[in-house]
Image: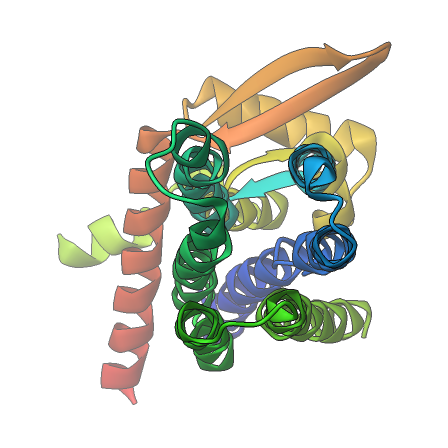
Length: 198
Length: 103
């Protein structure tokens, strides 16, 4: 086996591993889509509260979570169609593990009067921060990790500010804590795809 | 003795297409036929032959299913395949080292 043959083999291994990593990278579609749905849903709930239509809060919340669940299912099914990566499996499991406490926080505890609905956005924000931080760690993207501060900082802000317009803070958090990381992921994904084509 | 062992590279992995297939499968949990075909740039028939050879050696597992009416072939590297790939890499490293030493 001569030097050229070895170099050829090493370059096959390297290029295949890099190509596969780029192809299976996080596209950010999930974060962008659920970010938009959550922002619209939060705005609707905020409006219901402003206009004293509180009875619509819970149905709106259920619809929002169902749509997000459906988006999650469709995105995962589509992205895992060709290849299933280890990193995505870890991230999806983090999402799944966090979605169980989110359901408890949103429905079980407030409905059984453990605490008031006022606490729901604060507690959800704390969990969202964990998800975004984990995503940053899993994909080794420090600026995604920093986006988790938006969620944790926002939770503190919502806990200490008394206002009818709290929902606007939540919308800002969704945009900077979900949509922005989604766009960052998507840019990286597109750059990777361009490199693959080249 | 050492030389013989080193030069005795695993012939199953040694073929470029099979090396490419294993390099892909080592990176992911599983990949389907279309993904492997696009990534390696081979034809259906060629890829099938190489996949069968890898499966017969126990390096990969192949699962055939149907998604609606479309047949789906999913491949994953086995423990044996991982070990073989790792030792193949080690052997390559040793050869590179030997060539460096010669220089």
